[in-house]
Structure formats: structure tokens, C-alpha cells
Image (tube, rainbow, N blue to C red; front, side, top):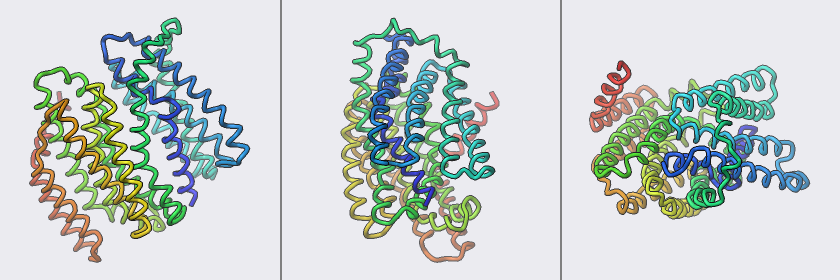
Length: 428
């Protein structure tokens, strides 16, 4: 029940971040990589937008406190929001200027600090929800301080370089991404509110735990996407970009399908190890969430085409359609099938966005997608999902899942070539 409450607050914070900050951190990456703009001009103007946004959000604190909204926890949400706003522009700037190792180390540092403080405050001191939020605050603060001083990011702050024209151009680029972020939030997070209303806080806690397992797959997507976003922008002007984008998508789909198949194969064993008995039943929500991550990743891949072309309105349009479908399906499926209705709704919504973007982005890049390869993989993976819901003994279930996994591996045999290439590059 407490975990469900925590999840609602963190979800709300992620919803507010792009609104209050005007999603300016997205513009930082794109404009720093544009040689027509100086780094200090881009950073200073984005920093000013973030400062003003933080001041605006503070004006609402007395009103929300008066009505006892998130009573006792509102302060944590405010602090986390402001820290994440600054942390976002810092990390995007460091990434854009090519300091990838520092960017990566910063992510590891923040994770270690947050995890360490969580163990100290929640496990050892028993601070509960307070300990959870304080851990997040400390992790974000340490990250900001590390980037601020180690990279000497303060040297790029030159208030005499404030420019209305540059700020305007950055906002024209970033503001269409706000509704896109909200639609992404609708599909990823609004499910919690529907579950809370139709089923209850405890069910939301189970669903929140279920969402943690697909995060293993999200890690693969995140690692790839961070590199791909930079490559897509750099290669956009190249004449052979269509072939490059098509090949990259093919290998990306191979990794995502094999990763999904592995998790489905060991899902129940993994849940038995990672979560307590009270949360074990949350496994049943994971299969559709996993497939939703696959479609979400494919959608994000094609979304980069809009970013490279500086046509961010297309991102908003396709996300709006997907978000609307998600809300409608939540209202239909959750009352009918319970919590799993939220996972199914998310999966279908991301599938729709991916299909829309496949056709819409052809005007920028005529990518070739191997439909037969995609369909065969989906048939095998949905068969794995079906086996999980059939009441079989664990040994029998695992044997069938193993056979299906090997079939997925055969269909995606190029994964072995990727692993070999990765090992060669590592040795070099």
C-alpha cells in the first residue's frame, strides 16, 4: 500500500517535469549538436528557462498545502521536481558536448548513492516513505554537484549571452515535445490512476513492482537509444541514411526480441528470487508490459527521425493518438479483466504509435522494416506468454519456454554476430 502511494507521487513528478521546464532539456541536446549555436549560449538560455520554471512552480506550494494535497509529502515532490529539472539539462549538455564517459559515470554514481541511502534510511533506520524520498533527493543532488564542479559546467554560464531569439528557437523545438511527453506519461503512468480508482492502492503496488521487471529490458533500450539519438542526428544529412537507419533498426529489434524471450523464459524463477511472497502474483502483469516495452522502444526509435529532421510536431501528433487510445482502452479493459487490463492497454497503444510512425516518417527517411521477421518473433513471444498462463508444473513450463527461446534465437541468429562484434570491439 505504501509502495503504491510512492509510485503515484513519483509518477506525478515525471508528469509535471516537462510542463514546468517546457521540456527545454530536450532542446539542449539538439541545439548543442548544431554547429550554428555556441555551447554557452544554449546552456545559459536553457538554464534561465529552468530557473524561471522552478520559481513558477514554487508559487503554487502555499495553495496546495492549504488544501492538504499530498499532505506531509508535498515538499518531497517539489524538491525532487526542481532537482530533476536541473539534473536533466546538466546531463543532456554533458552528453551533447561529447563527454560520454562522464555522463555514464554520473548515472552510475547517482544510482549507487540512491541505493546506498535507501539501504541506510529504509532498511537500517526504518524511515519508510521519508527515507525513500530523501534517498532520491540526495542521489540527484550529488549528481548535480558532480557535474557542476567536475566538468566545470559553470564556465558555460554567461548571462551576457542571454538571447531572446535563441530561447525562442529552442522553445519552438521543445514545446511540441511537452504534449508528447504527456502522452508518453499517459501510456506509461496514467494506468496507475485507473488501477487506483477501479482496483485499489494495493493492486497499484503490485503493478508498480511488475513494472520493475521490464526495466531490465528498458536498460537495453536506454543504452542503445542514448547512442542512437546522437548517431541519428549526425547521420541525418548523409545520402545513405535510409540504409543505415534500416540496418540499425533490424539489429535493434533482434536484441529486443531475444531479450524479451529470455525474461519470459525465466520469469517465474526470477520473481521467486527478487520479490517477497506477497508480490509474487505480480508476475501475471509482466508479459504484456514486456511486449509494451518492445513496441515503445520501436516507437522511440522512429521518434528520433522527427528529432533529427527538427519536425517535432509529428511526435506530438502520433503520441496524442496513442495516448487517447490508451485512456479509452483502460476504461474498457481494467473493469473487465482487472489490473492486467492496464498492461494490455499500454501494449496496444504503443503498437498503434509504432505503426503510425512507420508510415509517417517515410517522408523523412524511407526505412525498410522486415515485417516477416517482426511477425515471426511476435508469434513465438505470444506463444511464450500463453504458456505462462496455462497451469503447468514449473519444470514442464520451463522446458517448453526453453524450446520456444531457441526458436527465437534461430530466427534472430544475427544476435551471435552482434555478440562476436561486441567482444572484438571490447578487446580493441
